[in-house]
Image 1 (cartoon, rainbow, N blue to C red):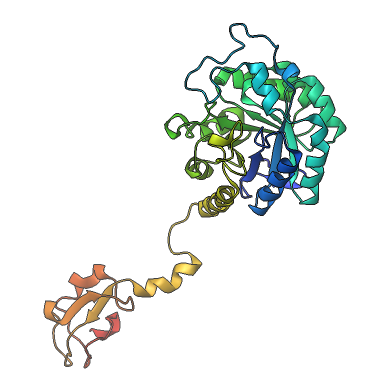
Image 2 (image 1 turned 180 degrees about the vertical axis):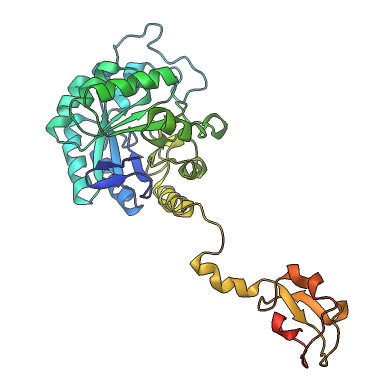
Length: 350
């Protein structure tokens, strides 16, 4: 499958997974903190930093009617109105340029999730290298169409989406000109639990939609993300916080910088371990073959003696005949004096 290129970074099976740190609202309305998060992401080895581009006004209405207040008691944000939550969590648009500039200075990819067409227009003015569509906007086909018209790579998160809804999103993106598309398997609960993550869907998505697949991960820790690499994930997105203890709208299910470093290292190891279908020793294993078991003479033998079980042992190292020949050697007559500790070979007999 053809790899995707985002700001000179190839994304595909031949490269380690692209690691994205989502800042979300964990900057706690401090630009200084947001810039520090970018620096910490770089130190951890992260490839890209993602923002969310919206305002409370572009997301919802400032009303307290039914549906506009989160009523899920299990939610981190239960009881809050959507408008108040987005007003707290949004990243001021005037910060975007400074954050993206910091990303470029550090050699990182800086981009965002727009939540309406005005956000796309704004991000275009900043010449972002790619776009991300959030799971809750996966069915916003007009938004997907507008993003596709930029002719830039698009990443679509698929939390909650049925196969039919994903197909509509993919068809809309491709029909509007998007030639570089990545889908992310996602579970839209915060935090998500491993048993509800269903990452076995990743290879199925790849076959079904014929595009690169990654993971937008809201589980705690790095285990799910590392496992997803073995199933073909080429992108991993996780939320970043400087400190869960200091709080933030998404802090509870976000990774701290040292955990992000572990994520980077372990997903790279998982990718390196995939290799190719291979049987037999690798080049590095050739020397280890010497420590396999083989058949050795275990007693001094005189010329003409006939071998029995008392004269041989299957031991390490592996310089003698393979253990499968043990029974065949019983009854063989040695053609010369053989010292204890001699590896068996066919030229000892006959």
